[in-house]
Amino acid sequence: MNELLIVLILHDFFIKSAVSYAIWQILTTLVPITLVTIMMYYLIARKQHSAMIATASAFLFAVLLKTFIELFLIRVRPHIVLGFDKASLLTDSSFYSTHTFIAFASLFVIFSFEKRNSIKWCFLILAIVVALSRIVLAAHYVTDVVVAIILAYLGYLVIKHFKE
Image (tube, rainbow, N blue to C red; front, top):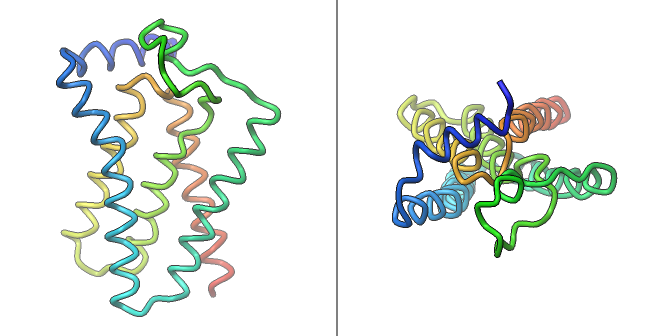
């Protein structure tokens, strides 16, 4: 199935009005910020300084990698291709989703330190909501989101390797 068709189907299914669009916009902005804030508070409270440094390094890695990739690969965002939002500020390359990367990098850090399953499930659900919101808002293609999750996991593995 064509990626643009998947984006269109999800967009049409979830975006029924300006209110639902606004809700998805809020989710895609507030959820990653909330995840990072809670995770950092958690790490500070547990005196997990190495995990804080690892997380900050992962976020820096995400920004640098995206900047590097954009030098060679420009992928037009789906909402521009579909003609949804002609006045959007999102005109940079779609590949890969930094929001998703940050959400899943936070998730992997929490999974490695948190014992309570309830906290892990909350972070997992929120990370999935962020990933889904990027597709629903037509800001990213499915592969942008999937690659972001894979890169977050690989970054986590690298940091975990150096930590041990």
